[in-house]
Amino acid sequence: MAPAQGYKFKTLSIKELHPTFGAEVSGLDFSQNIPDDAFEEILKAMAKYGVCVFRRTGLDDTGHVEFSRRFGELDDIRPYLTPGRKLRYQHLELFDAGNIDDNGNVHEPDSARAQYNKGNGLFHVDSSFNPRRASYSILRAVVLPPPEAGGNTDFTDTRAAFADLPEDLKETLIKKNYVVAHSLHHSRKIAAPEFFKDVDPTSFKMSKHYLIQQHETSGRMNLYVAAHAHHIEGLSAEESSQLLKQLMDHATQEKYQMSVQWRNVGDFVIWDNTAVMHRAGKMTGRFPRDMRRTTVHDNSSHAWGLNQEGEKNPGWSSRTEKYSFGLRTTCLQTVRSIVLTIGNSSDNSWR
Image 1 (cartoon, rainbow, N blue to C red):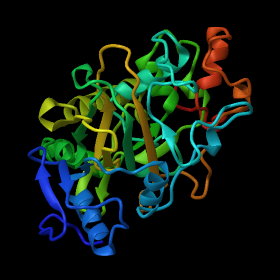
Image 2: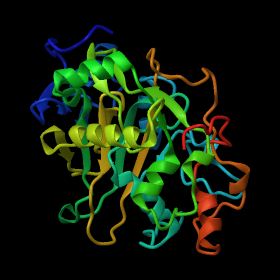
Image 3: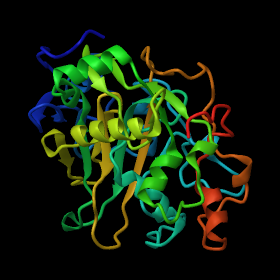
């Protein structure tokens, strides 16, 4: 698909949400099959805006999954299943992005699941910790808290952030072509350090992706950072931490941020993980929030990063067979039961 920066939309109605990215899109009837020409315009809107919001789609789980398939091959939950785990949804392609348990109750604030979910409140990209990263994520509202409770989803524009870097730093980053190791354990431990104090991210294999990349559908350069970014290969721990912090602080400045309010059941948002970061916004009160997400495998030349092409998502290790969110286990057993492990690392040279 050709870059869409100067494209004039014919089918879609576009309301821009931020000076550099984000759009609310209307003009589609999701009760009918979306015509190919209209879907092509959705792809162009995604290339230009990075985040597209669709209101009152009326899609159910099946419609959500089938629409998502048009974007490419979907990730599914099978690598993460363990014996005894109850499936909440009929479709394996749907990921639980809400705050309710199998019985429809809101997770207790001190529960292991709630501690695990704290990582979602950090700016991140989906699946950078996997060998094959994600392109699009498609999140749909099923049950929403009252508007005054919050629960927005926040985004930040990493393409604009790269463009605004000082020229000397941009030149250095491009010349060095740094590789970043990503770890789900790392982001979870940052968000809930006490709960995950016994987890050592360096004990598990990490997935490696280039720090600076060209966003292929727009032709723009992108800063591929995230809360999952554990270290930069080839730098000392101190140098790596300083540079990652500098870049994250820069990319998450308020001027690059946009917050999407969920207004209606059936609203959904598509974002491009290779152009933006996102996080779960703050919510007050203990209200149910049922959000379901599909995740599209990236198909760009950067999809596999420096990982082995064809390598499967690692899923849960043998230590997670006694899966539980911790109400009947010790803290350490609980940690082991909920942490998505990448397997024993074959390269623990960075410490």
